[in-house]
Amino acid sequence: MAITDQATALRQAGVPVIGLAAGEPDFDTPAVIAEAGTNAIKDGYTRYTPNAGTSELRKAICNKLQEENGISYSPDQVLVSNGAKQCITQAVLAVCSPGDEVLIPAPYWVSYPEMATLAGATPVILPTSISENFLLRPELLASKLNEKSRLLILCSPSNPTGSVYPKELLEEIADIVKKYPRLLVLSDEIYEHIIYQPAKHSSFASLPGMWDRTLTVNGFSKAFAMTGWRLGYLAAPKHFVAACGKVQSQFTSGASSISQKAGLAALNLGYAGGEAVSTMVKAFQERRDYLVKSFKELPGVKISEPKGAFYLFVDFSSYYGSEVEGFGSIKDSESLCMFLLEKAQVALVPGDAFGDDKCIRISYAAALSTLQIAMEKIKEAVALIKPRVAA
Image 1 (cartoon, rainbow, N blue to C red):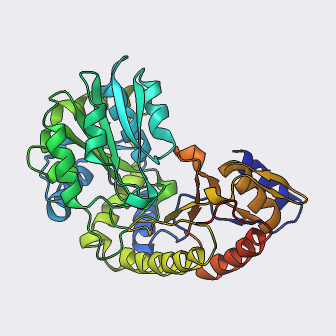
Image 2: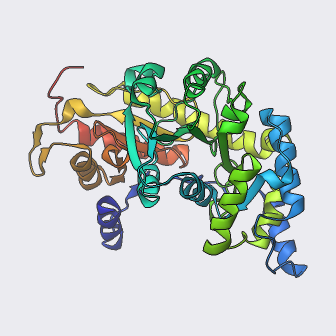
Image 3: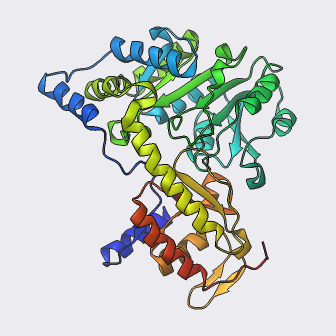
């Protein structure tokens, strides 16, 4: 928030700040989806829907999950919400009690630990390493499990790292989960379609014995550039979905009727979103390749090439401890981001927000031309400091 406030102040003062902090695609919602939304308004489809979502949308979600993910659900095992974020919050509230432990690999999406705390549960952070592509080591998970362990949250492709869990690694994790009958897995798959070959997405619920232990969360925001439409869904065994539905019925009731019509149109675009999504993914991959190459040219910087999503999580810790004339000390990810905002006029997100202070997050949900300008500015700013430790 401090970075955002400072960036806003600079913009108001007329400084052309380049924002690479956004967690949303820079593309417009595909026209056929937007048209479905405007048609819903014109046709008077503007009233409350059932709390769990319209029957036609839940059926379409079941078809998508069967065809694309190899997991079978009926409409009463699907809950449509106002964004995947609401799905996750409600799932944590529904299955966790005070004293329970929620296991969260770090780096993590900023909201996961807070959701656990909201439910009265204890977040247990499982650190990962950039040298292992920020993937959870099964032996670390096994060492942290006990009778209080209630929920493991997995996000693949990952925000903030872009890491994708290979199926073989998920199978190793599943073998450990099987040993703890009370342990559930929340699989956050919101970035599943934004993935770069040869990486492949695997749904945790599709693994042997994991269907009844998994709460699968997905939505429309990222792949279909529908962040403002606020539409996500949970698929899980009926008793979990019913519990989450009770929470939703007291929080918000059903999602927007207009957004649900748009979501139906999105699912009708074809396998994995069809050409509309593949066009966006192609642009994201071009941007990723440019940034990976550019950051590798900076001395002392460590990078794990993202296999999905639209973020780079870059280790700048070799610069910590440096003094910069006219700025002061760069001691952590927040002061580095402040430095880059002040000297390069580029807004990034400090890694400490995601549980890893060695890194900063760069979103490449911006035009390639914008990223090229930003990269030149970052290189010029970084040239003012020298790595404290040789890489």
